[in-house]
Length: 472
Image (cartoon, rainbow, N blue to C red):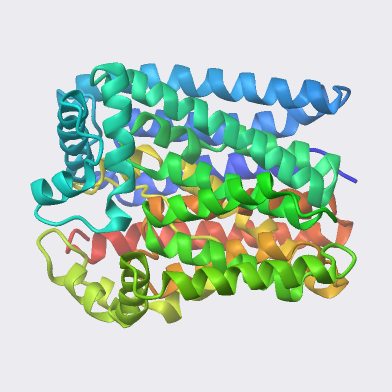
């Protein structure tokens, strides 16, 4: 088994990135990226592929406990350094410690400060007040403002301490990835997956933002890890199930679709998991509890919001039409839709390698999206390997959660939005690690073909972004 990202693959991925960046810059010189976005991208790509190749070998002799402690400490250190650096970077670039075009962030910050004021007055049931203050606030939009209100209350509105807490949650997410992958795929895959999670630029990037993605990813991993552990135990351990169900319910307060996927993936695991992994009585008990929960939740506000989500699934075409006609929009966006997104869902979004006004955040994280483009080959390969070997029945919960969420994303209005892909990213890293540790010589040529596809697709994407705005 290969316990690290192969050096030849690493060198090819890095070389392809610089070749792609150079060609795009020369072809579209008047719309080339600023030098500092190029630096961000180079650091993101080179550090990920280089250390994914070297660290698994250097840390291979550590015991499981020592590795887990080390992965947490290094992940936390990387994220804390980035939180501080990004804080002052944004302060210098925008005049405020928030990212470019921070519309959602300013709303969350305002709601957090208002919630802090309510808590300071001894008002604990702050949701009704926050809803009135915001002119109406659905359950799925309430979780993060309430969470932020508590943090602001405890830290006296400290933005940087709030982000340090994000770094802590993100670092522990790497530990959860390790535990989950270790239980499902074994030590070699688990260590590589944890290192991927530690290094992937996208997860680090969101620690420096005031968006809710870091907390959502943590809750997703907490839910799946505890549920997977409980399912595989012949005893019905209430503590594990209480944590798993609590995390799933909290997800509804962050994004309805993820809460829905969490429970559907659990039901799928209860039905399709191998009898060697989940006993019949565990399956029966789980399905009974889920059916009971569905019965008692019928008519609730969460149930109504879930129904609204299902009813609005056909609005994608009108949304893409709006994106093509809005000011600064891409006139070619109207031709995109689920038929385009579905085959690419493991790979998109493609990195923004050209200068587009108002897309500074996408330019900043373009290296992370390129890394995801490359790794998606291994995600797809892992699903093929699991399907033909029949081993997918041993990992139904993971497959169902990742694929279920991505299917929802395909038919949503946000299939092309980078931040909406984040909840599936740790699972994609686990499956990519599984494929890498099970590579055969015959797979190498297909990886070379994939790099060519990535090159052509990114070149076309750069043209698409400019042509749709009449810039070329």
